[in-house]
Length: 256
Image (cartoon, rainbow, N blue to C red; front, side):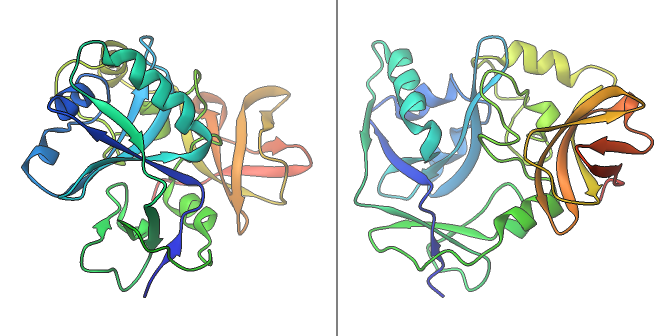
C-alpha cells in the first residue's frame, strides 16, 4: 500500500556538525537516539515561559536529518530556529523534493511507526508521493485523545502536560535543559493538573472553539468532533456533571 500524501506538512533538512546538539538544547524531547541511526521523534518548541509554539517530528532517515512540520507553523518555526542558531554549525534548508506519506496498514519497509500512538500508523519520507487522502484522521485523533496543531494545540497558549505530550511520548524529563523546560518540569511535579484535554460525548456538532459551560459558569472549550465525540480543554473541577456547548449537551467520557 502506498499510503496517502500528507499535503499539510513541510519538510526542512537540518545539516551541519552541530545539528543534533542544536536541537537537543531547544526542544522538549531527547534527540540523542537519532545520533545512533534511523529514527523518528515527536517533539515541541516552547516559549521561555513554557507555552507551546509548534510541534513536529524529527526524522533521521539515514541520509538526512529532517523536520516534518505542520505547514501552517513551518515558516515561523524555521525563523525561530534560525534565530537560535547563533554560532552553531547548523544549516536549515527546505526539501520540496520530498514528500510525507502516511498510512495505517501495509507499511513500507523503510517507514517509521508514528511515535505518538500505535493507532496513528506509519510515516514515510521520500521522493515519490502517495495517494489521495482517504483516512479519517479526526476520528482517530478523537478516539485516542491526540491533539492537533492549530486546533487543540494553540501557539503561545497551550501547555505540553495539559495537552497530553507526556502520554504521547513528546517530552523527556531526563534530557536536561531546553527552552521552556523549567515551567514544564514544575507542572510535572504538581500533585494534579487542574486543566487539560479530555474526550467528551457531544449530542450535536458545534463549531470548533465553542465555549463549554455548566450551571452558567465557563468550563472549557470544545475542539475537534467526530462520530458524537470530541476533544475538549476543560477545567476538571467543573466538568463532573452535564455541560453545554452552544446548543449541544456535553458529557465527560472516562479515560480509556
